[in-house]
Image 1 (cartoon, rainbow, N blue to C red):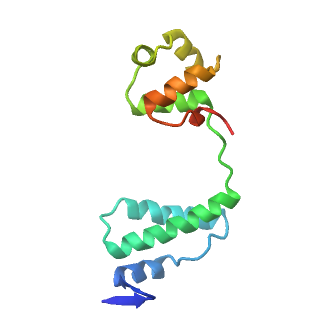
Image 2 (image 1 turned 90 degrees about the vertical axis):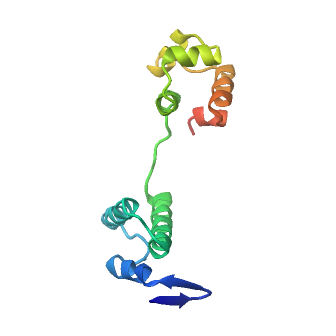
Image 3 (image 1 turned 135 degrees about the vertical axis):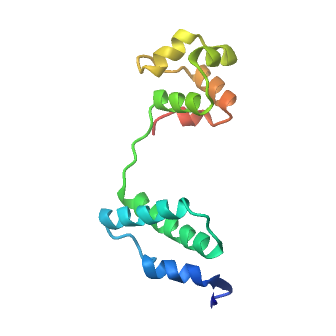
Length: 138
């Protein structure tokens, strides 16, 4: 059975999920943990339209709470570089050859003992198809 809300008809599964975990503003960190548990559960399931609509709404509520209450520290350029290399399955040597930055420089940045120059940030941004700003904290 489906119900109409405003101009959209939602499947009963949406309302069943609302009964399990009501869609309200996240009140505190315990409520956030419970919401995240529900999100994690839904992400592991094959979702139909009602569950997808519910997941979207719950995710929005979590995001609103986190924007106001959860401080997420900026990633260092070393963290960004390590993550990009790992997700693209690149070694330091492979990246060095691809972008024209010495392997020793990449190693020093990787270990946090050296910072990237503006030119290197631009090269890496272009190579990974991201904004060079991704390497800048703040």
